[in-house]
Image (cartoon, rainbow, N blue to C red; front, side):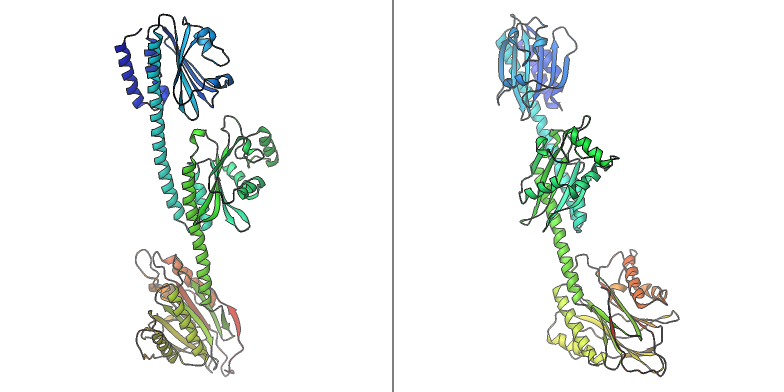
Length: 618
């Protein structure tokens, strides 16, 4: 037989090739040629099997031939199942004449060569299948030595395959980690529940699966929120399945709070919209007419059989929903359960954060509503409206407030203020300030005295925050005008939009509320005529800042002048939206209270007019 030195050199080259190979088949030349050079060997043949009896690949090289015979197939050979090895390689000697074609596809090739014995080593490569490497030898061969060489060659092949799998797992782990990190960033960047769920679906396709459906768990059961697929037509079909399919609804209901990811395929999908049957495909196409709703998972051509997985989305010990992946790819490319659990955990936390944010948002807005008047008084003498825009993206309760208070003498008091900071403490002071001022002004207390008494109350309560406020009263006059009396405690000055389009600032000043004891406040008086509008606002309006650094305050008079002739509601809403569109920075709340004086005929009765209430903007 071939010299041991020659074989040793060939084995050394084989190990070197194995360290570089990206697939086992690349070793074929380095394995077959040295074995064929062994004395008495006339044929080398290798096979690759899956699922015990499915022949995937056979390669044979005969002595004197330059080209191997290669057969790639998916042929089922039931009788070959008995050849499947255990965990350790098995070397067998079999007379060629004794080989049964039913279990030995190599037999036909062996009979074409002079060899009388088949020496074969069967071995396991991975959990999905096994392989064999054998030689046909004649009487001149040292069979024991041939067996040793086969075992050595198999050792290299197994080590090469193990290394390839390990490198593949490491590369996949790196890709999975990168995908999970990107998924977390994408999902965490939105606090909107439905947008977060849509991102969960989009991130996974096509990196994880060909399609995905996401359901949110509501009290009445699973609620479909999002679906996506690499195919636009199949995405539409997935959306319909997610909304209406009873099979999927029943599956998700059965899953309940089961935390483990489950994979379903083959007969497990019978009766489902994912079943790979020609009958189901034809039925679906018949009912869907033009085919725009092509059924996800229907078999056709060389497409892979459909597999689905369902993962429960659980966060903080409660189920928030589920994600269903649809796969149409080889089994080797299916994600493992550990990866899906990790993705589901991250998705669940993002969804739960969005749900908590939504609950907090509703709670904050509800509390904010209770800190503001639900209705404003209206008579034929004035046109009142207000606007309030929450500016903080985290939705802490703001400290801005406003109100309009009818007074016993027929005048009306307008008030607006801003408590320093946000949160529960600011909300408490907001309620105290608004209701204190409202009570005093309803009793006919003048603006300066009302502010002084509020300041005293804040000092007595030892409030840790200060606040600003402005109070303005509008008192009808016999000549058809109104006397505007304004008193400010460190608050931005109101503006007056005259009927001719000019804008002026009401010059007032005064110390912040809640800072010093025994503070008095002076009032400023001026007259406004019919069609004139008084605009009170908080600094969230004026301090909205554009990217270049300029404040909305610098253009506010011009923007207000452009609103001449509009009613109070339009002015309030327009200024709020303009400030929002203007600012690139600044997150303070914006509150506006607008009063347009409609006037009274000269000499008219100035007694209090009947009031009606109109709901204010929130």
